[in-house]
Length: 194
Image 1 (spheres, rainbow, N blue to C red):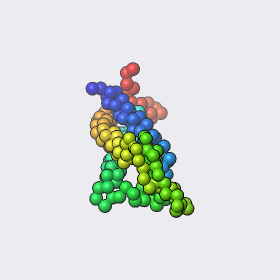
Image 2 (image 1 turned 90 degrees about the vertical axis):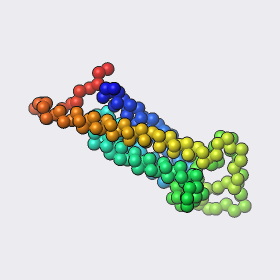
Image 3 (image 1 turned 45 degrees about the horizontal axis):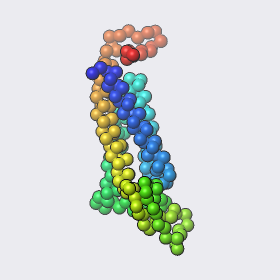
Image 4 (image 1 turned 90 degrees about the horizontal axis):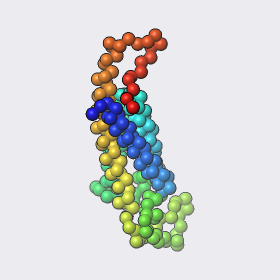
């Protein structure tokens, strides 16, 4: 397996991470889930950094991308535990919305879901939370767990691929000692054959 195939593999993982994170970001914005919005934003930045590192042969960028992916993996494991009510975590708490009272967009708008609201006591400055949601094909917890699980899988693959590719880049980077650099001081690594 040549270096180009490894590079293209990591670039593909970066693109898949970017697409799935942007999709997740849209639905978190629709539900006003502020903590996931913030973390998704950082993930988008680091995925772009990882893509740039793989594309431009920059192992330090790939290493920072791998370090972020370990944090991203931890965040998504937390999300899975949160929606499964593991330990002291409660999916109805205000941890993810940072105290605004909002909730997952999928809670009310999931496939086939019918929400029933208690309109007797509307709370000012807080979104109306349904008292009961019925007829859902998939509960919102399952949808959120699927999102987080997908990110865990992509993150793990990105960590392994990124470490391996940065190792290859760093090993090849030692060859610069035997190469004479042009008078401007620039050196471009060899491009992949088309």
